[in-house]
Image 1 (cartoon, protein in one colour):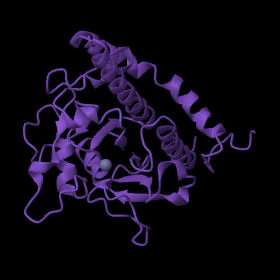
Image 2: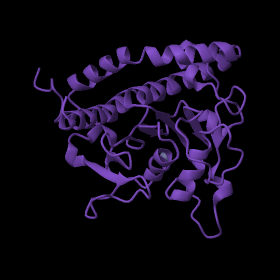
Image 3: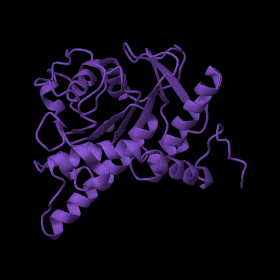
Image 4: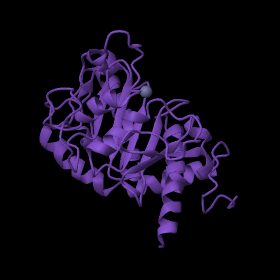
Length: 277
Ligand SMILES: [Zn+2]
């Protein structure tokens, strides 16, 4: 595969990821997914200001600098105000190559109460938190606001994004946003108080898998608690299931890509099978 082919395939998968996340209820008109540029780690790519379901071609995508989340093309159209979530995670962790941010309603009970989201079943071992017992960490932006700043909960500058990125590292005890750069995050998912959640992965397949099963796991936990309380995975089961989760992600990815390629709502000009039907 040439570097051009690799780049085209990455954009195709990014467009498919937008559609998959919409089809599986992770994003609605809001929420977003990005990838690190496959040839330049100092850049990342995501849709412009568009609902994920409507992203259809490379013309809908904007490339940003990791350093400050400014667009490479100064004439680029309007982007997502929360792109700093993505830029600061790519800056903090060299091994993160895909970031997803969501407000999926199944997860919201766990950002507006003190009930911890925990890994419930074998598909969600990756939810085990390394830095905060066995509940998924919760980032609270409120303490970061300065006088006069609009408290709209959005991660719309580098300061907020860096503090969120810090939460993905076990060593973080503060929200200073000044943690050391490292290769791999300790957390795969961090919840965001009164807002939503953010997921990272080494590639788009892993991040999409985690985002979808975070939503499903939250739904399972809520139903279990409404029924009779729950018995989730033990710490050891979570750890081993997380290893297993890494090995089984290609299978659902192929299904999810095929699903959105065949649904008329979604258009992907880079799809290899788009003219199949
Ligand atoms: Zn958001």
